[in-house]
Amino acid sequence: MLRRTGIGAIIFATALLTAGAARALDDAHRFPDWKGQWIRAPTGIANQPQPPFDPSKPWGPGEEAPLTPQYQAIYDANLAEQAAGGSGLNGASCRSHGMPMMMNVLGPMEIVIEPELTYILPNDVHSYVRRVYTDGRDWPARYEPAFQGLAIGRWIDADGDGRYDTLEIETRGFKGPRVYDDSGIPLHRDNQSIITEWIYLDSANHNILHNEITVLDHGLTRPWSVMKNYRRNANRRPIWNEAECEEGQVHVQIGNEDYYLSAGGMLMPTKKGQAPPDLRYFQQK
Image 1 (cartoon, rainbow, N blue to C red):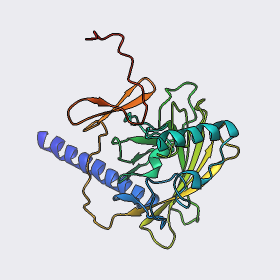
Image 2: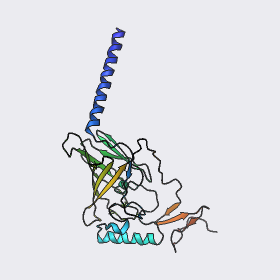
Image 3: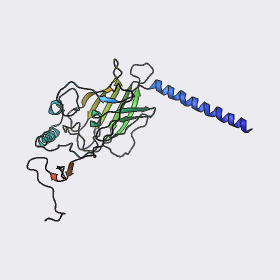
Image 4: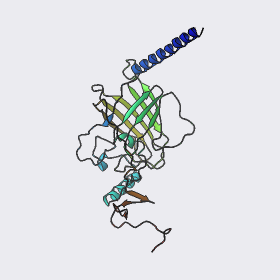
């Protein structure tokens, strides 16, 4: 009797394993192959200080962001601040870049696809975990605002071959401040942005991943659409380096001012004529 029970348990476990393997095989055929390490594709534009939000244009004012007059003035003041030696709107606080800047992919990115959830894992100032829910859920009545927002997506079989090839994502529910890139192009401070993405492999080269991003934001005069391209690392066993902005951080933000910590541990100005911080709570000699 015990022997029969043991055989039955083995048969049952084998059936479960077989069913699980079949499901895994089915998922492998349903979803695209986005495995590996993705790196920002070169733009061909020389002397870029940092990746621009629009890779097809020069970094900074050359991107011609369609800002409202109010937010263009904020951006111009930010550029003047940087020209004077300051850190500008993006600062040096090590806060999360959030959306859409995190998809500029300053460091390598990984994408992990599960049937009901896709993980997008960029890595620059932090190791981000961006969750895109593809389980058919609707927008919840309440949710916690975040720099990267809440992302809900759906898979599309665009070419009708019976296999998903495109991930459509809508992201909302932000907190800020956020910028598009390190030049400091600002998003509206009401954080009501809606960002849509269409991510898919290049039809001729499956080692190129496209991301069409459109931003709707009250700081813009019209929706701003750009195309981002990522290139798959040919090394099937890439190195994943850890990025943590706080490590070795020498910038100190006090109030609205950014200062610099010298090698001797002394607080230094970052721009000419910068006032020292308020020391009212420290005993003066």
